[in-house]
Length: 117
Image 1: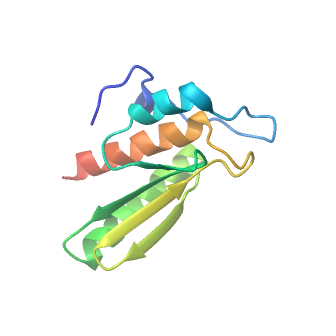
Image 2: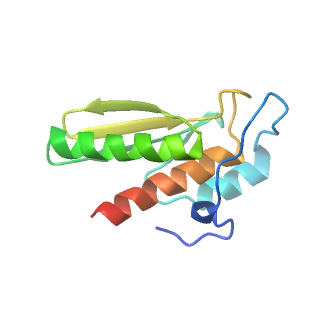
Protein backbone atom coordinates (compact mmCIF):
# COMPACT_ATOMS: atom_id res chain seq x y z
CA UNK A 1 0.00 0.00 0.00
CA UNK A 2 1.28 3.47 -0.85
CA UNK A 3 1.94 5.97 1.89
CA UNK A 4 0.03 8.99 0.74
CA UNK A 5 0.10 12.66 1.52
CA UNK A 6 -3.64 12.65 2.19
CA UNK A 7 -3.56 10.02 4.97
CA UNK A 8 -6.76 8.43 3.69
CA UNK A 9 -6.59 5.41 6.01
CA UNK A 10 -6.31 7.65 9.09
CA UNK A 11 -9.44 9.58 8.23
CA UNK A 12 -13.14 8.81 8.70
CA UNK A 13 -15.84 9.21 6.08
CA UNK A 14 -18.11 12.18 6.80
CA UNK A 15 -21.80 12.53 6.10
CA UNK A 16 -22.47 13.73 2.57
CA UNK A 17 -25.41 15.68 1.20
CA UNK A 18 -26.22 17.25 -2.18
CA UNK A 19 -24.01 20.24 -1.26
CA UNK A 20 -20.90 18.10 -0.72
CA UNK A 21 -18.27 19.27 -3.20
CA UNK A 22 -17.18 16.65 -5.73
CA UNK A 23 -13.50 15.93 -6.27
CA UNK A 24 -12.73 16.98 -9.84
CA UNK A 25 -9.96 17.93 -12.23
CA UNK A 26 -6.34 17.92 -11.11
CA UNK A 27 -7.29 17.18 -7.50
CA UNK A 28 -9.21 14.10 -8.61
CA UNK A 29 -6.18 12.74 -10.43
CA UNK A 30 -3.84 13.55 -7.52
CA UNK A 31 -6.17 11.65 -5.17
CA UNK A 32 -6.46 8.74 -7.60
CA UNK A 33 -2.68 8.48 -7.97
CA UNK A 34 -2.38 8.00 -4.20
CA UNK A 35 -4.46 4.81 -4.24
CA UNK A 36 -2.75 1.44 -4.45
CA UNK A 37 -2.40 -0.37 -7.76
CA UNK A 38 -5.43 -1.99 -9.30
CA UNK A 39 -7.96 0.80 -8.90
CA UNK A 40 -9.65 2.13 -12.03
CA UNK A 41 -11.08 5.62 -12.36
CA UNK A 42 -14.13 5.27 -14.60
CA UNK A 43 -15.32 8.38 -16.45
CA UNK A 44 -14.07 10.56 -13.56
CA UNK A 45 -17.24 9.34 -11.82
CA UNK A 46 -16.44 6.21 -9.85
CA UNK A 47 -13.68 3.98 -8.55
CA UNK A 48 -13.60 0.27 -9.31
CA UNK A 49 -11.37 -2.60 -8.24
CA UNK A 50 -11.43 -6.39 -8.33
CA UNK A 51 -9.60 -8.96 -6.26
CA UNK A 52 -9.08 -12.67 -6.95
CA UNK A 53 -9.22 -15.36 -4.28
CA UNK A 54 -8.57 -19.10 -4.21
CA UNK A 55 -12.22 -19.96 -3.64
CA UNK A 56 -15.69 -18.69 -2.83
CA UNK A 57 -15.13 -18.82 0.96
CA UNK A 58 -12.15 -16.45 0.84
CA UNK A 59 -14.03 -14.08 -1.46
CA UNK A 60 -17.05 -14.20 0.85
CA UNK A 61 -14.93 -13.54 3.94
CA UNK A 62 -13.38 -10.48 2.27
CA UNK A 63 -16.83 -9.27 1.21
CA UNK A 64 -18.02 -9.47 4.83
CA UNK A 65 -14.99 -7.45 5.97
CA UNK A 66 -15.76 -4.83 3.33
CA UNK A 67 -19.37 -4.69 4.51
CA UNK A 68 -18.43 -4.32 8.16
CA UNK A 69 -15.94 -1.54 7.44
CA UNK A 70 -18.50 0.19 5.22
CA UNK A 71 -21.03 0.18 8.04
CA UNK A 72 -18.49 1.72 10.44
CA UNK A 73 -17.62 4.38 7.87
CA UNK A 74 -21.24 5.01 6.86
CA UNK A 75 -20.17 4.81 3.22
CA UNK A 76 -21.46 1.95 1.11
CA UNK A 77 -20.21 0.56 -2.22
CA UNK A 78 -21.68 -1.70 -4.80
CA UNK A 79 -20.17 -5.16 -4.22
CA UNK A 80 -20.16 -8.05 -6.68
CA UNK A 81 -19.25 -11.42 -5.19
CA UNK A 82 -18.61 -14.38 -7.48
CA UNK A 83 -16.58 -17.57 -7.15
CA UNK A 84 -13.06 -16.45 -6.27
CA UNK A 85 -13.63 -12.79 -7.10
CA UNK A 86 -14.84 -9.62 -5.42
CA UNK A 87 -15.44 -6.39 -7.34
CA UNK A 88 -16.38 -3.05 -5.83
CA UNK A 89 -17.71 0.14 -7.38
CA UNK A 90 -17.76 3.23 -5.22
CA UNK A 91 -18.91 6.81 -5.64
CA UNK A 92 -20.93 9.19 -3.52
CA UNK A 93 -24.58 8.69 -4.37
CA UNK A 94 -25.69 11.99 -2.77
CA UNK A 95 -23.77 13.94 -5.41
CA UNK A 96 -23.52 11.27 -8.15
CA UNK A 97 -19.77 11.89 -8.25
CA UNK A 98 -16.59 11.19 -6.33
CA UNK A 99 -16.02 12.78 -2.94
CA UNK A 100 -13.18 12.50 -0.44
CA UNK A 101 -15.16 9.68 1.21
CA UNK A 102 -14.63 7.45 -1.80
CA UNK A 103 -10.85 7.74 -1.56
CA UNK A 104 -10.89 7.23 2.20
CA UNK A 105 -13.06 4.16 1.71
CA UNK A 106 -10.90 2.77 -1.12
CA UNK A 107 -7.70 3.11 0.91
CA UNK A 108 -9.35 1.39 3.86
CA UNK A 109 -10.45 -1.55 1.70
CA UNK A 110 -6.88 -2.06 0.56
CA UNK A 111 -5.71 -1.89 4.17
CA UNK A 112 -8.28 -4.57 5.10
CA UNK A 113 -6.86 -6.92 2.50
CA UNK A 114 -3.29 -6.17 3.53
CA UNK A 115 -4.11 -6.89 7.19
CA UNK A 116 -5.93 -10.14 6.40
CA UNK A 117 -3.04 -11.72 4.47
